[in-house]
Image (cartoon, rainbow, N blue to C red):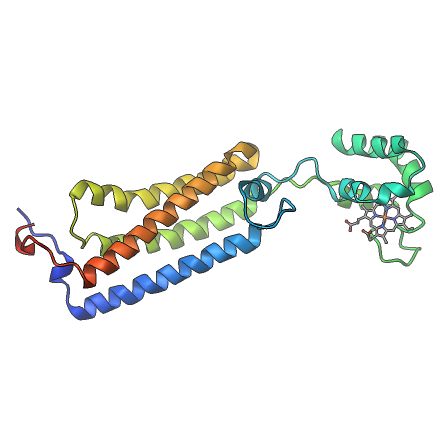
Length: 246
Ligand code: HEC
């Protein structure tokens, strides 16, 4: 039987180094959770982080535009009839073409809105005087762009691979049934791969947001278990079997 290293074979200096590393990574992970909370929290208009917030972050709110939100939020009071609001909403839903804008929407805006929403009004409000200006407020929120997902993916994969590798290297010095150990070192890697893949799927299929949350949670749980079990075994656990015969 080959001899594999265990914590019993590690010097105190090595254990101090491992401990400092694990504590620093653990703290870093807590801050990463805090960052996730603050960057997605409340997207759905309710305080706190929910699967709905994650859905909006990746998929967006396809029905929601600044123009639609403005009309729903009280600007429709400036219109003459509720039908005019419907004309504008229908135009957004139908893909907001320039032709239909000039024909149906511009006359409504010109008679009800540009008194305030124009450069001339001097009120500093977003102008509604031309198709291009209105389009700035009429684009639907389609969530994170592929470009930004690619950027965040490569940073995450490189960074997290290093973290999981070094934490895993320390964790394999623990004493435990081999199958548990083999599964525990593999799980966080699989979880982060599924997590990142599901960002892209969620961008197109919003129902996938729960996979993002579950995979992220699974990675966090397995990382936490590895850190805590390693710290415990390193300092407090006395192997029953002599380590020489493992
Ligand atoms: C009497 C002046 C006035 C008129 C007329 C008016 N608005 Fe506004 N509008 C405002 C002000 C002031 C704000 C910013 C404060 C707020 O949101 O209530 C605003 C904000 C908005 C916003 C939000 C802009 C953003 O930054 O997201 C939209 C959209 C909007 N208005 C659309 C309209 C439309 C469409 C009409 C015509 C039906 C209209 N407004 C008519 C004064 C006006």
